[in-house]
Each structure stands twice: as structure tokens, then as C-alpha cells.
Length: 373
Image (cartoon, rainbow, N blue to C red; front, side, top):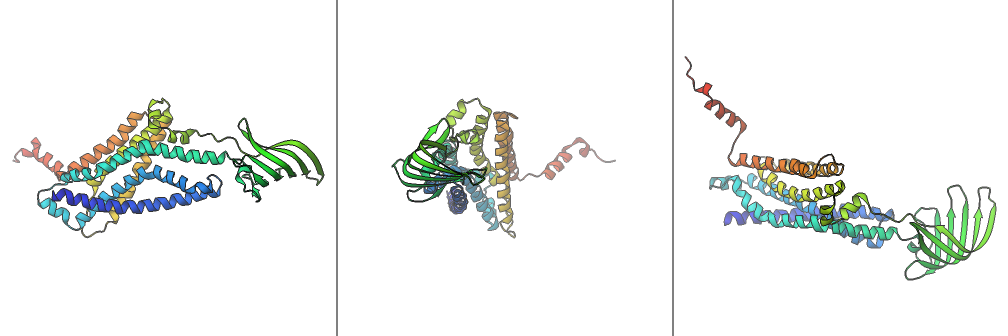
């Protein structure tokens, strides 16, 4: 039908343009953030694009939801402004009749959002955490390039290595200069060294070398050693808390009885329900004035998205802290929004008003029908 095809084509054009703009903005922001993490030493500079790709994949459900919401609002606003809605209403179409073509356009996007939030979101977080964990577990000796001086992650040591092995855990002709917090300085040179994990601590074990130490009073002490060990890394990175939950599969969350797992599961379910509710909200609340621009509808779109998204995060926090159960939170938040949007859509579909209902009720009341003497 012409009615269905014209609306779907208009929605497709608006959704495509909105998705490109939002994707570009989010990609730029995440790129700046990833570069900042790389400069802080939290991300391997050689793996910036991988970390960026996984991060963007994890944000795609939110981007798709917002793009779909904006596309519906902008399409209906344009139709109101260009008087197309008046033509459709005059030809026998009602506002409720737009629900069919809008949902036929939106359901593939809603399905993609659901699959991504249940499957792609934990997988992308898991891959990103593995990249960061692998980089954090690398010792200071592994991070340096042979033939170059390299400062340690703490900033108190300077390393130099002549050559190392292919796996980066052993080196030859090593030079280490360190400054302790109490003011002592030491210079260590050794023929060889290797990285080993003792418990959850990372150590650099040097062999056949010499150590020169200067104390606060500038007294010099020289010693030779066959083997010398010094801690060069932090504790092994342990992924836990929020990071662990974001990387957990949906099936593991369903089997877990932990309140924090319930909060994460509620957030994932809520993202899928949020996209459905936004379709109803856009259709029920969007109105246009031919003499006004689209600034009001755009402001409402962004405000509604921010408020709903923050309420979703708040609900996750409350479920995690056992302030409310998972099902009561889902019914209170998403159920109430769905009912309110559906009632608002019915109100506009039947062209009802509170003043008209009150006037009709007063006219039908027994007191209004009595004759005045």
C-alpha cells in the first residue's frame, strides 16, 4: 500500500542519516577516550583500534535505540510541518493507523538491539577486558624496546636492555636506574634478566651483575651479585565487580542468584524493552506546528532519552543493592512507561481531552438533568 510504503521509506532515510551522525559522534568521543587510556598506560597503543572496535560494538544497542527514536520523531514532525498528516487524516487514516507501518519498519531494528544487548554486549566487554588485562600483566621489561631507555609505569625506574627474547620475558645486558621514595638512588647492571610471577607479584630476576647504591647522605655502596630480584609490576589484574558482570554471559546471569547479577540482567532486559517503549513514546507524543521548527521535538527526544536511560541505570543499582526486586523494578519502570505511552496514544487516536470528558460527565450527572424552577 502507498500509505505503508511511503512511511517506511521516509523512516528508512531518516534512520540512516541519524545513525551515521550518531555513530560518527560516538566514535569520535570513544576514540578520544581510548587515546587517553593509551597515554595513561592502561591500553596498549598498538591495540587502540581493537579496543575502540569492541567498545563501539558494546555501545551499538544504545546508538540504535536513540537513532530509531530520533528517526520516528523527525519523520512525524516533518509530516506535521508539511501538512501531510492532515492529508492522511482527511483520507480516513488515524494516528493509531501509523502504528502498523512504524512497527513493521522498527521490528528488525528491535530484534538487532535485543540480540546485541544479550550476546554482543558481554562478548565485546570480555574481549576488551582481555586486551587490557594482557597489557597490564606485561612487566616493565616487556614494554621496553631493545636499545632504548624506557621509564617504568611508576615513574621511579629507568630501564635499558640490549636485546631480549621473542616472548619478551628474558633480556641481555640490562641496566636499571631507580629512585626510592626515601631519596635513595641505585644503579643496577646485569648480564641477563627474566620476568617471573611469585604469587600475585611480578619480579625482575637479574643474574651476574653489580649494584651501586647512594643513600641520603651521598654515601656510595657497591655490591656484586649472582642473582638479584626486584619487584617491577603491580598485582595481577583481577577482573571483578561491575567489569566481571558486564563480561558475563546472559545465561550465567540467569543461573546466578547474586543481586548484582540480577541488576545486570535487568539492565539488559531493560535495554530491549526501552527500545520498544521509545517507539510508542515517539508515536504518541510527537506533534507538529507548521509555524514552528523541530527544535521542541528534538529537545523532548533528547530529554526523554536521558531521563529514561538514567532511570534504567538507577533501577540496576537498586536491584544490585537489594532495595527492590528484579520483577517489581521491571514492572514499575518499563510497565508504567508502556501503559502511559499506550494511554497517551489512545487519547490522541480518539481525540479525547480531559476537559471534554469532564464536561460530558457533568452533563450526564443526575443533577444536571433537573429542571430549574
